[in-house]
Amino acid sequence: QLQLVESGGGLVQAGGSLRLSCAASERSIRINVMNWYRQAPGKQREFVASFPSSGSGVIMYADSVKGRFTISGDYAQNMVWLQMNSLKPEDTAVYYCHAITYTGNYWGQGTQVTVSS
Image 1 (tube, one colour):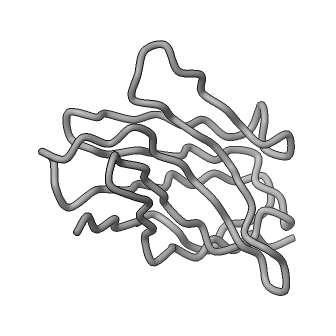
Image 2 (cartoon, helix red, strand yellow; image 1 turned 30 degrees about the vertical axis):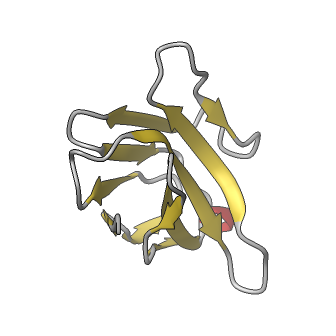
């Protein structure tokens, strides 16, 4: 069973930056893609960014974070990061790491990001 552990969340003022990390428990498991999602209070979980393991894959971002967030990853370590700049109060949410393997989908427990105005 693959486990994902997020870290790096916290409280930051609007305009500030945070860097989230996600580490998978097993480096030997082949992960096809690692993503970040977020869920704000009272809202559905939404896609934030995607980092494919294949060189032919496309890094994708939600329109709401384009130009402010940058996803990166290292599949030799099965890790992915999310650099978040120019944070806005509407970015406040629990951020979840998500991984897709040949055997299924896996989710982390989430890390809270709070942006104060």
